[in-house]
Amino acid sequence: MQNRERRENAVLASPLVLFLVAILGFPVILSVIYGFSETSFTTLTSPKFNGLDNFRRVLADQDFWQAVSFSLRFGVICAVAQCVLGLFLAVYLAPLIRRHGWMVAILIIPMIVAPAMMGLMYRLVLHEFAGPIPYYMYALFGWSPSFLNAQNVFTTVVVAETLQWTPFAFLLFLTAYQSIPQDLREAAAVDGTRPWRMFRKIELPLMAPTLFVALFIRFIDGFRVFDNIYTLVGAGPGGATTSMSIYIYEAFLRQGDIGRALAAAILLFGSAFLLLALAQLFMRRAT
Picture 1: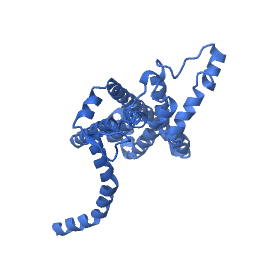
Picture 2: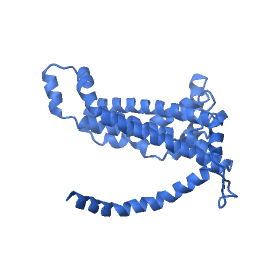
Picture 3: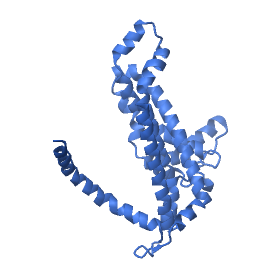
Picture 4: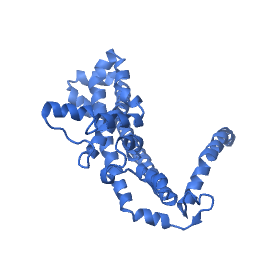
């Protein structure tokens, strides 16, 4: 009986597997071939195998390690900031949202806007000479910082990313918070448990799996960030905002070094796969 069910499952899953192999398999194989070859736009049809030379050039490139450093810092800071703010908003606004559910639609508006459009919007309002925010800050206080210079650009892109994607964490935490059985809260209140202690001892532990998932998703999204930063400030002054994705884009389309770009992409994919495997291992041990 079990063997029959396994065969039926295999037959039912085979169209999806074949579709994924056809759609994803060929680009992946081609990327691996180019990653181990000396390839440019003029030699796409005849790549010359050069072993690990592309990977050695990537690992010896200071710009690559700067991009890795930026992506790690950006991913960690944004993930923590978004989850802390999202958790605070979910818990603080839960009673109000319970009475006025339409408030959720307003709170998630930043998440609906395309990241590239959000980057263009921030580029417009923060422009040193034409932006309204620097203009009014100078008019009111006689001083305005340069939001996109080398000293402030990292903080600017972190704030922009956090403002856009905090609603995502907010939605996850609000769902998890509202799914906690009300009986637990009522029993704790009868025992005289104060709200802060109830949150630390009952509600937060029950929301811990959601918190971990949100942190992981937001870190991965921040680590591979491209469109909103690229439209806001590009690679930044002195390459200060060059993420891994921007590094690969610059090497591929701007410099035409396809082999090096795809070698960096393979390293990025490998690191993301390793992080996913570690996250799954951690979740299994936690449960």
